Image (cartoon, rainbow, N blue to C red):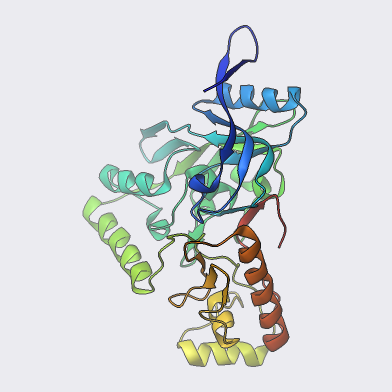
Length: 321
């Protein structure tokens, strides 16, 4: 494995021409010109210096559970965040960006801290969850955050943002809109509770997801965001069909895709899941090009048949949908 000197005090292990498919849940994607695994904040800074010095674009990789990479790969520096320290003081949990979200939720059960139960079963890292304001069942991680520590990718200076400065909204944040801000640490304010009760909520959330067969095997989970809908007739149809009220005028993208008759639609090795219509899955041989073609077809059909434009929840690298 080649190494490159960055300065007098730091050496990073830098891999060249590494396929990115194994680092994504889609299992799709060509090679990165360089791949750096950063285990702490100074190594993230050094990785960014390497990218700047070589005038190459960079991309931060978390758990890869929400990323579709081009078949041609990435002609730049892919930086894997492996920072995973966590400390607890009372109800305050400080956790680094590379910490696995599922592991964190199980740890909060052990610590008797409530607040993350609705996120149970969502794959990925804490950093990715913060960036996308991950959530489910009406709650999101932004609801329990107090501050987020980040790096300015240009100056390499640390930045601390209060939750009201993070611009959290539905599956969105300041960090998602500004790739120059890299999440490295988050401070969560959780509520002390009985471990048995917290565990019961986590178990119930996972059971609810499993009942809907929400497995992310070779997919990114929900491919599209649940759109806001203004068509009163469409809202009425959804509420009558599902027996629930429309929350904030958002209708599940999976229901819309189903109504457009697209469940199990397939393009090459890419397919709309027959289990959950908002899951676009790699059946085993899919290319990124096939996944993009399928996503565009789904968007076009839903807009033509129902008048609703779907927006991707997944992130992309080296391609557009």
